[in-house]
Length: 199
Length: 199
Image (cartoon, rainbow over all chains, first blue to last red; front, side, top):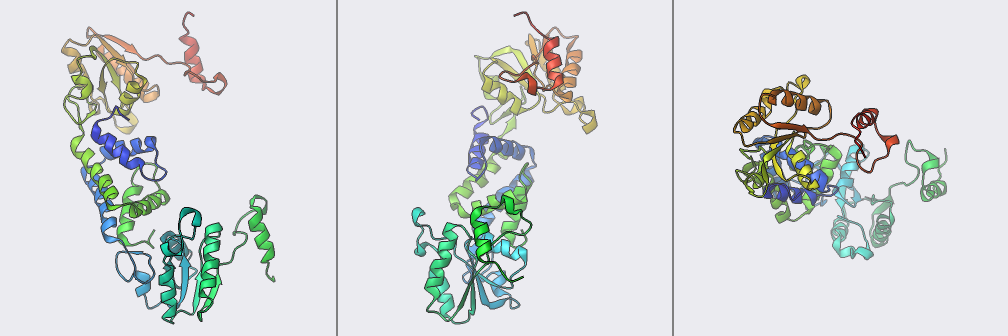
């Protein structure tokens, strides 16, 4: 890397800070950027600054949005009495892509993880309770991930919400569609057996 | 992707134009950029513009440089009578890393490839001949790649340089160091046998 001119080295260093981009990939990307047109590079450069400036959190669901409230929270065709609680904005996008939900969301921005110093205060839990206390929410679907952090966050929220007159549910867990039992981990298989349903 | 706010979508689109970056990786990178500090994002954005502004081709070797002539062409400790001809600036870096060459370079910026419309006019061949005609170059090492395009570019240059009083050589080809013959392609093995040397 030290054999390139200083400005290329600087770009390689900045690019290597991105997740999953090592020095080799960063070098390849930097040389590609050098070869593209000035306009192309300007567009990339500007769009990086633009997201930092424009994207805010929606004050209702805490999803990523250029507007406040966001497109979903503003939409009168969505069911505003059903709130789906997710860890990250990307989880919200995954659910939207699946098209299986017509309510609104609440993004926690993480999951409880004492080992990493993430307690309830670091998540949008206070805001969720406030939203429930307003009384319009009838069902709260806990759609945190099914790993240790996600599961304990779901339990924590379920306990916390017990005093409130809201129906709390959890997304189903079991064998993913299209999968082969022999390649599946034991915990999932055990869970799928325990939660078996009438055919 | 369409579930993200417009400014994020724009950044994802710009990032997906980079080589080897698909929509999924671009989304991951865009969300990472969103999470980093404003300063971090500004540094990345600026370094992209900076390379486009600062990096030029050295007027002597046509390598990438912030200065003209470049660091290597300016260096009095390099042997300016030996010129190593490479296809790309990255090849020059590979040779510098190996530390096996103390002369100067000439970057062609490609290899002859009639099928892709790349003829001698698209490469820095005219400039190489001009450099040789100045009379200071004693040896010209053809270090183009050993694929079809690189080999034919080397042959073409060797023919073109015949009338000139310069010693033209080609980097050795054969079995790469540390490799296992049984995994090597036949062309390399054949070449290594043909060019065998006294032990």
